[in-house]
Length: 121
Image (cartoon, rainbow, N blue to C red; front, top):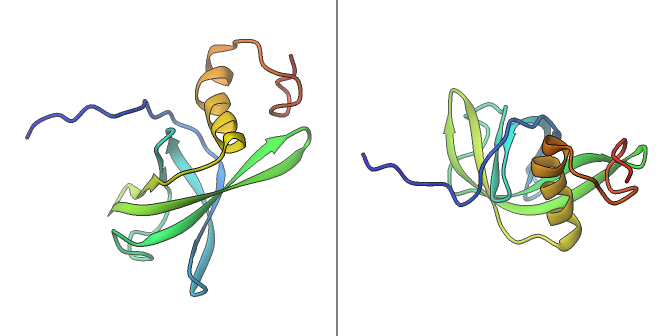
């Protein structure tokens, strides 16, 4: 099997995430890892099938409060380790929050004041 390089690096990041599917399913889970293109969710593999379109709502702490980022996503894989999502398009605020979680907090680079709780510049 040929190795396929990921478009972006994934990191072990634990966040609350809501997964909703139509009006039939909605539950709160935890991320196991995260990238700019998707996430691995600590979720029962039988809840939703691959190729199912869902809405992922990432819950991120910002300025002492919860900020929810709504992202269109698709389930790409299910298994014993969890459920893998591929993100669709998202806005600038979500991109900034993801970039901060994945790269800035990890490297300790200076941040813009008030972007994420506890990381003022």
